[in-house]
Length: 329
Image (cartoon, rainbow, N blue to C red; front, side, top):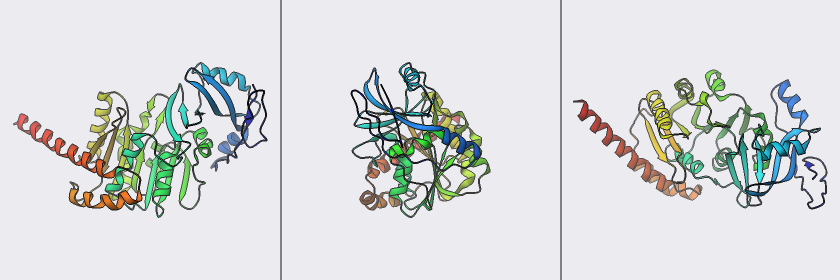
């Protein structure tokens, strides 16, 4: 088996002719990044895995032994982010087959995973943000949705994995420019030091085993809150055990003075938490509902269903709080 290195002429094989779409080099911000980018290439190679036949995209030096790399992939030992394409979907994986993102090849701009659609519920409260910051690029689903769905907003995406940024063009992520910045940085460090402010911050940062610990601490949530403008919204995707998710929700609630709403993903066990810097809490639900028809015309999302679920969950939380107060008395 032979592989094609993207950006080079396609290499025919006995059974396949491997296509080599143009892949851009990421913008680098340091000598270390520029050297690493120069040493890596994106390889496109067919691979057979227990789940079926795929095309794999791997970021490896030009002189790599691709057969050895594929053996690592088959054993679940490949340590870097990579992409698998089955002809219908293109998926980003991190570590031992942890799915980070998925794109439909027929609808590359669609939010294919349910939890990503839930994270766009911020539109009910911030329909026209000026600046949206995202933690975690992944396959670029949310970055693309915000960039293309909010044409007047600036988008800043922070991603800690250089390889993920290198693979971004495979997911049709737009080129960085006046409205879009891709920042290679640790988000915890970035928010602790940046002077940038935002109307919305979306946190969806996972590593090989799940949520990155540095993105689950109260100090991180406090740094994010300090960068939100009045009326701003934090949206965080939470995964893990029920106890772990509950602990993270409690941490967010403490930092945001209890101004939180929770959506449960109907497909997975994910929870999407919206936290607010809102001087007029609780939400004006009549105003939220009034926004739905216009938003539905602009965004292919079930925002009406999200509004109903959020309001119902809010009422339930008030009931639980009231029952707890009675028990304390």
